[in-house]
Image (cartoon, rainbow, N blue to C red; front, side, top):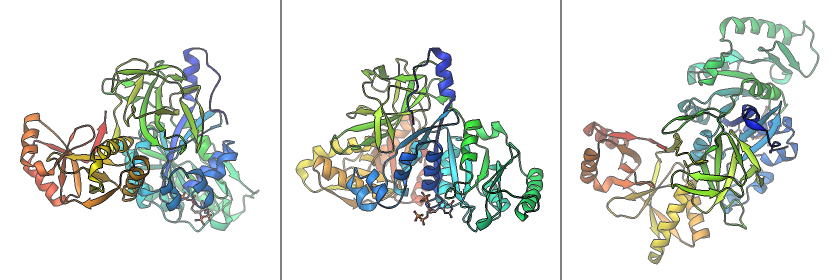
Length: 516
Ligand code: G4P
């Protein structure tokens, strides 16, 4: 595995390096086979020595992410990691996401840093809850989706039924890229519809029942299903579908070959003022995640930044557009699962970790001097709201500071009630509360508990300044400010929320806030 390329001479070389980047994530419902597929992909990419350590269950995984007690105790992964490997002349960055649903906000933000997503579906179960949720996030951002229907070596639904389910339940056109040869125990490989090639693990004669079934299926498929349409794929309206078995390593290289052939290269990205093209010479980067305590011996804080354009080099001076400050990039790092190495250079599409002491926040833009702010990193309205109860009243100031820092990291969302009451934290899953409590104690020496609140919904409010102020004054006990000072309305129920919306038609209530 090589993560750094030799220094390219000139802009063409930079453009070429960028065109060869493939940055993607895998989305799936638990148990569909994401971990197994990740391993097989890494193995195909020659990163075999690491393949074992991405295993989602058992001891090995605990070894990988033992940086935090809570992960060790629960056997869950809270860390996002990046796995880089080369395949077919391309440099792949596979962004791994936390496995547990309670950390889905992290997953959502990580999806803002990819150019495509591989959606893994269990061939017997079809589309499941979490696949659907993650798919919706991809759709919101028009992220192209490649579908991998896994576990074809077991009893599975009929391929036509699976394709039908994807198109009808996700409103996404499906174009079969490969077709399964044989089913369940007799599944031996795939037929590549785009290149008209058979990829099977054992020789088959034309009279083999599997070949007869294949011929019949192909006739139907070619007549009734859409062909691959590059534009529709790029825009997120059509998904090429691959059949396979991660476990048996069938169909994995079909998938990678396709990502090489048409897996999108780094995309252009919107800022408040203009669109940044991935291959423009100036370096720009977007911070999409902050991770603290990756190394328990050094209480460091790593900002994960996606390079959005140009070439990043170690030692370069960066402009931090939110604060207007400049700093030298001394120790950018590449992460591979839990290992890290200094990044001498990186190109658009790559993800680097930047150690910092709290200067960098989620959604921040880094440039070589240009005033730019990338848009589109989302905050989602939390579904659980709790008031923080301090064990020791003397530590109120410390708690305020600690909560701000942890909220900047994205551990929880922080809401400061406008009536001066104790801060409220918002989370998507209750495990986030455990993490908050453990970290406040472990890192800041602040013991806390949680009290319930009368609130179950939070919405960001925007609108005319005068009307907004009048609304806030009239609803003071339900108003809070988020980390950025933006006003948030807290409602006790969906019913109350609807009523408030109806009574205030001039204001807009948002369940997603785009940073930037
Ligand atoms: P996840 O990360 O999406 O949660 O899924 P993971 O890869 O851990 O796979 C879930 C289970 O499905 C595992 O079995 C795994 O071996 C199995 N699996 C994955 N891909 C395939 C496939 O292509 N075919 C078949 N038949 N099974 C597959 P497990 O018994 O839960 O775990 P383990 O004991 O194998 O580790």
